Amino acid sequence: MQELPNVQIDARARLQARVVAALVAVLFAGQLVYVTIAEEPYPALMMPRFSWAGPNQASLVDIPVPEISLIYRDGKKVRLSQRELLGEFPTGHHSSIMGSILAPLPSAPPKQRAPAGKFEPPTWLFPGYGLARFDRTDPEHVASLKSWLRARSREIHAAAPVQSCVVDWYDDTYPYQTGSGQEMSRQGHTLMGTFEVDLHADSTPLP
Amino acid sequence: MQTLRRFLDRWLFEEYQTDSKSLGLFRILFASYVLLAELPRGLWSLPQAAFSPPVSIPALFTHYPPHWLMLTFNIGTMLCGCCLLLGLFTATSSFGMALGMMLVNSFSFADGKIDEGLLMWVALFMARSGWGAAYSLDARRRGAPAASPHQAWLMAVLAMAIGFALFTAGSAKLRGGWLRPDSLGTRYHLFWDYYVFGRQMPLAGWAFRNLPHWGWKLADWPTVFWESSFFLCTFRRSWCRVACAFGAFFHFGVWLLFDIEISSNLIAYGAFVAWAQLWPSATAALDRRLQTLSEAARAALCALPFVFSACWLFAASPDFRDSVTLGLSKVLLVVGVVFALVYLRLRWKQLFSAALLGNPNRG
Image (cartoon, rainbow over all chains, first blue to last red; front, side, top):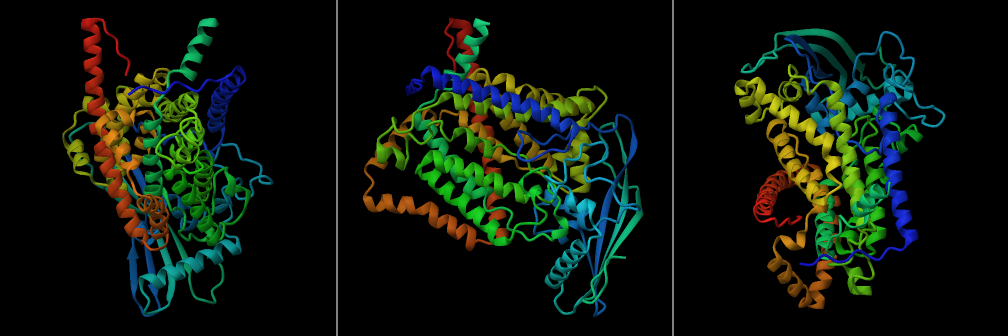
């Protein structure tokens, strides 16, 4: 099958095409610089990075694992994994969501919305940027979390109202072997923090 | 300087010339995939407490949009997808689809997790590429191909953009130490996937037990090399196709090891496949069949995407949609590997015959 000849492009259109191609290249170069100093924006010409190649010698790797308990007023206690609680949402988003809504509160309020060492975009322009990780004790934030947890609790056990949600955060320790031929098994399970939400209808904000 | 300019002009205006039927078939494949596997999206109801967008359109606001607005974005994008599938107002519907996907994705990623992808860029760059010149209502309305001339340079720019996107992944791995002989990048990320996220694929378990150090490095090095150098391959379409074929193996391997199905990238690579030339007799049969279709059959065919999309959005449960999407992704990953094998075999034969007979045949 013959390929169709390219449409006859006049000099002006050719110049426009060159400009567009150059613009894409220049914008990409700008994006490369931006993501070295700031968090990844969207949209961007990017693919998942998985940049760190891991430890290059045998070491212990700690993995934060939440254990979620819903306690109902009829005495029933339901234990859930992160995946079970957030089953409605894409799996890849679970860690991010848990970090925003059910991680233990930091000992001191965060000073900025961007991760440490990263450029923070101006909040007058991007007032929503990183909002959840910055403003977790805001009454609106707390009210929305409680409302959602109550609704989710009803879906899981409708027989009684929910009393509280307790999230115990453990560090699971794995001995990461750099050698091959070894499966790894969990060697530690240490409680690192707890986040509790009182879900009484008339309850006050988070502890 | 003149040589460089000639080289770039040749790349931009000639290298990616494609027949309109292949572009039309790709348009149908692309729109069908997006309607089936990418939409609807973001219709879940996260608490306001999870609103933590990256620098993006949602970051201009402080709240999630109301549900009706997300539904509207999805409906608009799906309508554009249906029009694109039929080749109706192709350029406009293609731009609309790119914009719609950008909006839908932006708000879906407002919890702070970005799922990077290429499809939005495909819709954007292909909009005026001429992919509505065949198998389209535009062609029937105005006469093809004059109504939608082929702009090969847009495909060259798309190839470059895909190369750039992959470069961000490859260069990050380079900086992260994936090329060090003593590091095992694939194994480290598989460790998280296997033990933390519980995606325990049989091949992953086997690899943990049996793969020697050099075997893991055989996964690390080609990954970094392929991701980093893809954009260099885009200066020749035949090289780009070879890079895409290796991409099919890469994504297949990622599925078997990590249980992560990235079939959307395969669809993006499909822009560079000469679909009409894969099976010429089937293309001819399709042409004949389309010419002999009754008006009623044509109307039914045109209504099909809209009826399907309405059912898909309003009647199918999210679980059902997820299971169909997952199944489709797995099928595409297998088909992609078969295509890649066949293409690489053909390329090998061409190179072999060229070396023996001095008959270079660019594919």
